[in-house]
Image (cartoon, rainbow, N blue to C red):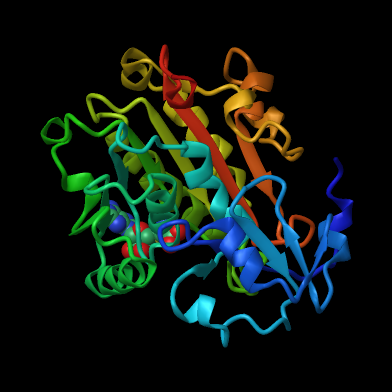
Length: 315
Ligand code: SAM
């Protein structure tokens, strides 16, 4: 289905926090709103239940939400649609998977992971380098009721020793990026092209390094990489760099196929960026792109990679 319906329709997205409540209970609490079937029909007094992420809803931005008890209690969490994709794509299984969230604060994706994992105890290790942001992460997990599921580790994820985490089966890597998907260009208006390229190069170097570290976890089978950048340097090119790396190849990492990455979502990775790899179309199809206005949320990009042989959600 085309996304033109979303054009110029400002939407406030929020998800039912399945740690505390159910989708039906949220709908019951918002029963005064009329259900609509597509994003374009959202206006004041209506609610849209997302067709891609099951626990996600959209309302008009002027709809009273933060004053409602379901928001104050943490039963619903305001989170853009694109930001809900990574945890949903990782699709960890309750009581089976142990997940590292490598760059966790403020904790939107961590708490979403906890909901998908049924809040099962000690299922997530959430790393955050910045001490202040680690406090925010703690607060968010507490409000979401997820502290039993999440162990917060304040520190640099890249300094961890992967062999000490033999039970980790999957990782979510959402590193610092240019933010160009959120703030339009994500750069100062008077930035020179040279400075922009320099900054992107530096960010991409960090993003590749943190992903390489994630790929060293001995029993990790699936990694979701995401950014809120629209720049190919931070997205497809990071993936290409990784997949051309001899160590990464030897470890058996590859792109997941489209069927594991919200297949119905129409906007995929940029195929021309994958020309250095064997099957550019397959690689592009393993990625998702979203753009700020049309997709009813911030610009974002998420890809999925799996060690050959065991896509997590097929077993
Ligand atoms: N995943 C978060 C969410 O959805 O709420 C947003 C993460 S934000 C894009 C990136 C975060 O990674 C920042 O809080 C930053 O301080 C943290 N970070 C950057 N480098 C890190 C590292 N080496 N180890 C752990 N955290 C890091």
